[in-house]
Amino acid sequence: MAHRARPVHRGPAGPVVRAHGHADVRRTGRGRTARVPARAGPGRGRAWYRGDCHLHSWYSDGRRTPAEIGALARAAGLDFINSAEHNTHSAHAHWADVAGDDLLVLLGEEVTTRNGHVVALGTDPGTFVDWRYRARDNRFGHFARRIRRAGGLVVPAHPHATCIGCNWKFGFGEADAVEVWNGPYTPDDEVALADWDGMLVASVREGRDWIPAMGSSDAHRDPDVIGSPQTVVLADDLTRRAVLDGIRAGRSYVAESSKVTLAFTASGGRGGHAGIGERLPVDGDDPVTVRLEVTGAPRCTVRFVTDQGVLFTSAPLPVSGAGVAEWRTTASYAAYVRAELRHEAAAGPLPGRLRRSRIRSSSADADGCRAGAYGVGRAGRPPAPLRAPPAPAGCPAGAPHHPYRPVVGQAGGTSVPVCRRPGRRHTRTGQSSAGSTAHPYRSVVGQVGDHRRVVRRPHAVHGPRARPPYRPDPARPPGPGGPTWT
Image (cartoon, rainbow, N blue to C red; front, side, top):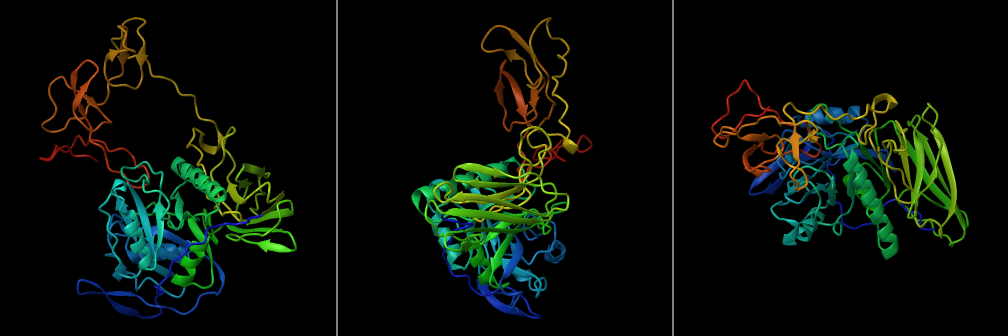
């Protein structure tokens, strides 16, 4: 039975980026020098190390200083972090005073293209990776190889995020790992997890290496929580080379916080044993025992997932958060096994959000579907049923009305009038006119329905996670370039 948890990839992992009381001065290109973290003494030896590999400071679009990020990382129980500013290496020279014997600082970049974002993880100091290309330009392979030549890993970030330009369109042929859990667990993370599971099945079918999964906070500012989620890596030491080798080999799982600890193994055959990211060689019909030991997960449910889907689901763990789940199978029945640890479902048959991470064959999964994402109410109560608002004033008697659309038109090409609720009026300097109808969500001016002019609100450019919609500030007049939004 192939008992695996993460793929085995390639690539050197250059010098350690870690401080031990002093810093090196290194050339970063164009005649400039940078003060970067220097190599430190050894960590705990071969052990599980926790890290957050997708963080932003005020050197791109974040609001925290490197010192603040370092303090929050230590408070979250992290052993390593990775600097991932959007399309710049400007922060690389400012981490020397943050790193220490208890915190390894890796340097990288979030390469933010028009067709998706990719984290360059653990590159050499001063490495810049260009972002000015699209998927149809067929140039991503060149830049992925540049990341590896700089000693880093190629990690597509939030591949199914819904923000503009965030959805990953370059494929996963060049990926060393994939970020399947980004910040608070949302439906797009659930889609990323399902997509990654499909890639595991394809790797079995095609007989090729599989891609490991990662989780990171993508924290920018308060209240973003650093270390939620986090990637837990089995490494030979707390050094850049060892950590990247562990991620590349798939010896890792994703956890909701440092409170969660997993031990996932498979045993069978002639006394064979395999852990997370490893393979267990057995004959097709040899019995295999899969075992997951958990701490820090009260009332969570264990699920074992294979290439055939979910084949085992446990009862909820006790309130102490500790428990053991075992399942017996064979290699002919399950080509790989991964584990998911999910919170209790708030209501109905929907799965609860994930508490822990995924691991292939030796696996544990990330913090899954957040209650509410699929209509589940707070505190386990089902939400109140949706009720359509009353018909707008002025509707003809008996005329059907649509509660959400902003204009008046015809229904289904017939002559039946449809009364629709008026939208909020948003005007844009130089584009509004008397009698025009404002559409609160669209971004252009055009015609609609009855051919009246419609002024539509410009899109807001969102980050990796959805933010509250912008609203006009009535107390501030529009500026010369357009409206003022708050």
